Length: 480
Image 1 (cartoon, rainbow, N blue to C red):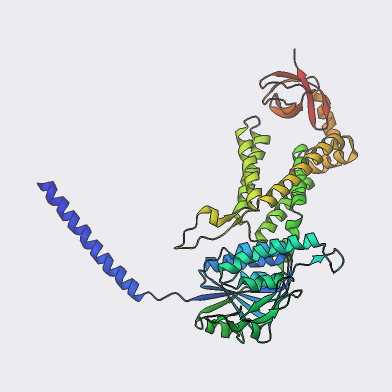
Image 2 (image 1 turned 135 degrees about the vertical axis):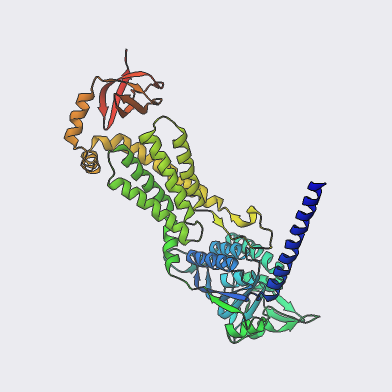
């Protein structure tokens, strides 16, 4: 009975605190000020090219993180590349708030494609939109006439890509067709708006004219004088406006990512040479700088964060511990190699912020550009393997290798001293601390050396004798 009373008293105290807490929360909720609404304004300027992808990706992610209500594309462009346009469309699909295009002066070609991916289009006075037929650009020259088969293929593919967005956002698909395909005639309510053989381009007045029953604007939701007037038209006059400014770094990021396979090759070669020579010198510095620039490109592109640089460093440290401190354990080396590989891949993976209140499974948050990843890694792996094979055969026979060893040793030993040490080790017998396939590690007294057999595999804990040297590595054979 005594324990029952204690339990009842405890329960009463808990209920009392819960009641007081609910009052406090209610007061806090009553006093809590509503969060200010936000409009993010993203400029679409100049040519639609890869640097613009980085700007759009950064702007969309910032808007998502800030829980923006509206994303406005402030557009003035002559168009650009189709592949870049498709990338931008996929990025815009990630934003869960309201999307609006403001045609500030012109939205030609790819600009009109991007506009159809937003939920509403508004136009400035005397602005135009359209002329979206695909053209073929010759490197070093201007546009050229396409073969009929290629033109039909491009019109069909681009048309389907844009129509899916137009249908989703409630635009007239016939208008889209007339902007892309010169063989499409556009007639609405008995009025021919575009003749066959021409490409549709609309002024702001034409685009907002109403047709049909019930009347509906042809394309534009209205003409507004400025972005401020647009915010008022949307009912967000009191909202906080945030302008995404181009930094100029996007072009540098585009250039870095275009040479990312080369950076990976340089990084692997630099670290390979560093592991093959004593001390730490120029090859290691070049290798680490190449990897640093590679991760910088991913960071500028808005793909990877600084956390993957940390993962890469941890993996590199584990790999170095395997090679220099705990040879033969395999676990450290494999874990380090796995972390390095994962960090390199994740530097190319596009991850989007979590939007509170909206289900966001990993498939919605993470976009894996599979083709880019496979292509870049394939080039890097094949290039690195070929370079390492060439260096392994050629470099030890050149005077450059001797200078590398001498400069990398940082005062530990000159080439002459190393040759003397090699001569002293000849004939020594030791124990392998790893399997030789044919390279590996063996211990001679207190010293662990890089060794290589004459081609055969030698098991771990085998007695071996040094019979010569190949560069820095001791050549060994099974001791009798």
